[in-house]
Length: 195
Image 1 (cartoon, rainbow, N blue to C red):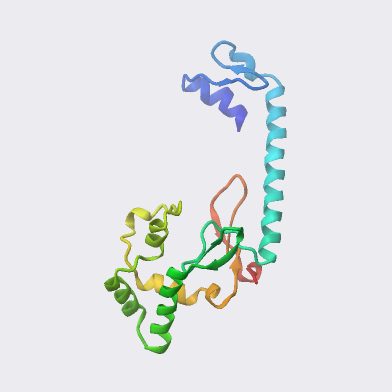
Image 2 (image 1 turned 135 degrees about the vertical axis):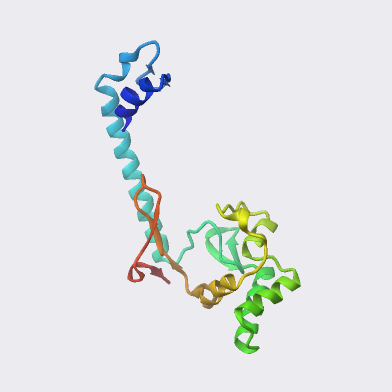
């Protein structure tokens, strides 16, 4: 796409493109600098390098998942990353009490998921996203603006169904299409990494 960008988009939009690297390009002072063979050849090598690097990173992640090492950005509510090993989860005592209460109320006391959410909200307990923010974790979710910090039955359901709470690490449920296309797609269950 770089040739189309340099030869069509830049001139059509009256813009100036300057590259101070090798090769030096300035579409204003030397508009023909984009027409040589060096730019597409370098672009091809750069593209191959990006593809190879992406493949190596995917292989590394696959090996870590197979060994049961955590590769996510944030641990599930009730856990945190081990400060000495970012690929290992340890119990977050404060949040773990909330998880224990959820299971206690659901399994032993017969609370509904809605009832558990209501009880946690009345107690003033922050939901998992609000808890991450309270702990000053660099958590970002595009829907954060909609999160009011309150528990919902859906959040309770996710906790009750998450196998990590019985010591089973499940990873690789989604993957990006490619290093160029960052859209996530679901992966069939038989391809998940379960340790």
